[in-house]
Image 1 (cartoon, rainbow, N blue to C red):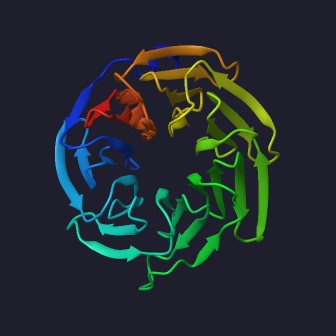
Image 2: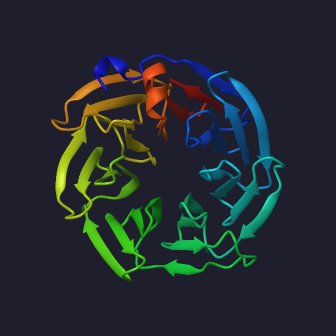
Amino acid sequence: MSVSDLPRNESTVLRGHEGAVLAARFNGDGNYCLSCGKDRTIRLWNPHRGIHIKTYKSHGREVRDVHVTSDNSKLISCGGDRQIFYWDVATGRVIRKFRGHDSEVNAVKFNEYSSAVSAGYDQSLRAWDCRSHSTEPIQIIDTFSDSVMSVCLTKTEMIAGSVDGTVRTFDIRMGREIVDDLGQPVNCISMSNDGNCILASCLDSTLRLMDRSTGELLQEYKGHTCKSYKLDCCLTNTDAHVTGGSEDGYIYFWDLVDATAVSSFRAHASVSMELAFCILPLIAILELPPYIILPCPERLVRLL
């Protein structure tokens, strides 16, 4: 992907939330997206046509994160009410509420087996079996010393970033924990599309790229402002560029290899909190530009 292909202009504004939007996520094929926020709702959209499809209501406090299964049939969400909600997409029915966190839940992800892992302010990761009727966690990892802000999953690993300054990898099969200490609070992590690297957003206004196998720090990306808020980061769908939000409302793109800031634009009047880069099938990449969706403090979602 060349610099000229990077998103620069607003394509669509999705309106409907009655409070700040805290997260926005594409589904696997990029045809739909989900948003959630302070109004305690989750909303399903067709972002390319600007259509609101469905609203999911049941949370008692703000919804901080949402994720969808690979077959688009189920949702999982979390937030300030300390519970994990497991939803049926078509009917909007809550299938199950998972309980166990002692405080707010910051992030949640499905793995490919439809189990879920949540990250909480109570300094723990908790794993949930969505196929079981139990509402209790099947595994609890509480080796962190501060809030766990973000989680990524592979077939055999749980990877989490924490305000204690660490990125921890838990190998489920081997029963092994690997700790990489970045020395700065970590508020978001994401994995490269080839699975070889982890990108971490830290509260010293620096994104750090690490080799997953060795823990080696490969590169640092600077120029944005990230000191007080949870700001998302990710790699573009070709792993050629790194992108992240900034507290001044800008979105930044850096060259993966030399860390040069190749593009930036103002997307909001204030904090650009989270990003979701649409990973499209190869044929779609040839026909469509890549898109970014980002939530807003202005009660809307922008498609870029």
